[in-house]
Image: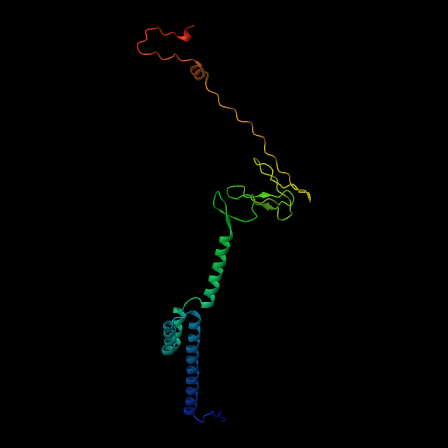
Length: 214
């Protein structure tokens, strides 16, 4: 009868070798789980207490502790949280850059001519390139066409080109009229022009002749 010989010679030696291999495998797996938990928890939090508790949980309870750690660990890593914060900041910056309608306060884009919610006129189109122009602009920045004056407003003031070597003439002051002498009222002149009677001496019985009675 042909018998297959075991590496250890008998079953007891073979069982010892098998047990030793299994123990080395579980110890290596246990240490690998501890190292993985240490590296993973460092990527998810900077709290030293949380890091120590996570490593001790896997170190003491091995595979069951690893399962508990997978349930209780933070959901996002630090790099993922940083990327999410950058995305939120970019979104908030975009919202801040968006303009609002002065009537309904809805968000509008920079190239809107009217508000799509309340139909408020936001900008006016250029007569040449049809680009949206702000009301405060004097000319189109895209094609250089000057904007026409708005209704109710005169033409924009412009400077006349000065000739070289010619000094601008200054207007002469207008001659002022000679002052008119003030005249007294007619009644006052009559009063001062009327001769007054001479004073009568005391004891004089002669009648007083009024010169104005004639």
